[in-house]
Image (cartoon, rainbow over all chains, first blue to last red; front, side):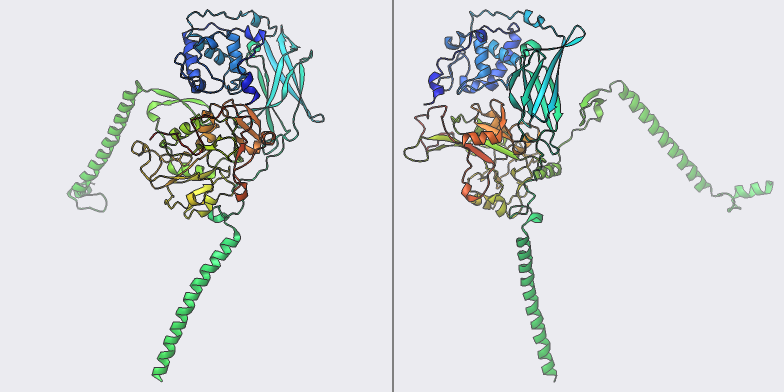
Length: 290
Length: 325
């Protein structure tokens, strides 16, 4: 029916992504951790590995213990969990890289012939900088945020070029990414255009988080900065206005006035009648005396 | 001098000294008694202190302002949440928020995880729904689709207007709640709701015995009560803790988005991806249910366009094979 479904059978993963390896050796601990993550995130569609009790969807999610999934390289499984496609949701915002590798470890525990290749730690040692910091500057005229990434290299702060960077605004349930992911230039700088109509707090402040995307290489590097770039949040409480559904104090004026006047009119009439009866009574008494 | 002494002893000079030996004795005895009691108490306190000194255990406690402090274990008192506190904060709601839900109909495949999560959180039986997935078919020639339908939390809620006892109310953050401590079970609100979002507890609610001593939380509507109304609460208790509602985070297919309209952002419960609400609604041609009634719902639907699944052949519109009694 949709284009997504017909192509779902051939899920191409690029060569370098396929060859990606886990940064740690899988052990009982990672398998247990992976099982827990699998049971929360994957079981509702893929079922219990080895039991074939997956959901009958199109495309079929498949049992992770079967050849269809086990024939993938570690990197491919990682990529597919990370990116998602069609019915398979992306887990990039749900699971940290290490957690995805733990799920891979759990899936691999159903494959007796599997032998793990662990990524060499060399890559990490190649990083020249012992410490990384990100500075975010505001350029109000161009509606731009400029991030400068610098690393500490032998007591000197030098720019970190060619690394991916994202900027996101903090929201109640998550981070709202601003602009796209950018690569830093040779000065270690990258510019992000922010939308004019982004919502801020009651003063227009927006809390921004700038983060390096290559977590394998740098670990989790992020900086929080707050700028006054948002629209003021001057929204009134939804129950502020007078309305028929609101509490007694906030009832519509016409309702309060008409209600009170009807009550007064009814009681007034009753008292008027009683008063008249009293008058008749006394008038009758006077007659008989005379 | 000798004379005076003699007099006082014999009790002749009453004005100068208290010549009454019995009164004197009682006075002295009282003093002695008081001293003994004080001393005894002091000794006992000391004994208690010495006794407890060795086995004084401390516990680490996180304070409101996020400091980790150590206090003696015997000073720890269990705080039971006070009904009055829960009621007050439940009526007030969360400041400067306007909760909004977006339901993407193209992704729903009736996995029923939202229904199950909701029913277990709110202690409902399998046939009592706060949210239900309906099998829809608009017309003969049009394809069927699944539609999750929670309470729409209208900005002009007809159910609240008709409540005679102020049991159901709308908060500043847009959530319509029910206080079953006030509800008299008249069911006017069920009649008034055009979305059939409310249900009535005709029988004793699930786990009624087990939850007997629980403090009633208006934001969770647990324990449920026989003879009162219940309905979707947008998981007001979870929102207070910064978490997505039960149904939203339980969905395996990315159907639900939930967020704050004031922040113009909604977060997908499955992928946890945060997107701009205005862009999402505009790009997908969002709509709301029965706009002609002027109820102004806080739930938006994205049309079932490019559906991600085939409609199961064994399920037909109008049929409900969704629960086992």
